[in-house]
Length: 168
Image (cartoon, rainbow, N blue to C red):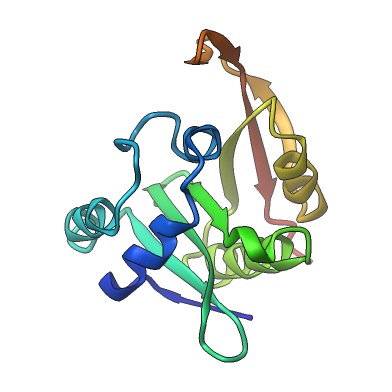
C-alpha cells in the first residue's frame, strides 16, 4: 500500500464507498450532504489545494487501485499538530488490515515529512471497529466531546484520540 495526494478522478469511487446513510454519517458527522458524490469531494479538493493547512490523500494498493481516503486539516505549525479526519476504507477491503496500514503511512507522513509531533482524530463511540483500528495504529483516547452528534434520534458521542510522536 501507498498513499498519494487525492486526485479529482478518485471522487466518484470514494463516494461509492459511502452508500449506507449510517456509515456515511459515521464518516462525516453531517458535514457533507447525503448521498455522497464525487463532486462534493472535488469541491473540498478545490478549497483544500490552496489551503496550506489541509491535505487530502488516497491510499492505493499495489496495483494502484484506491482502497482508502483521509484528510489532514487544521495543521498548526507552531504547535506541531494536525487533525486527521474523513477516514474511510473501501467496504470490500475492511477487516483486512488496510486501515492500520493507511494510518501507519499517514503517521509517517505527518511526523517525518510535515514535522508534526501530534495527530488527533475523532471517532464516534458507536464505531468500535474504527476505535480498535485507531488503537492498533497507536492512537489513544484523551477526551470525549460534550456535544453529541444526533443521528435518527440517537446520540453519538465523539471520542477524541491522539498519537504523539515518540522521538527515538
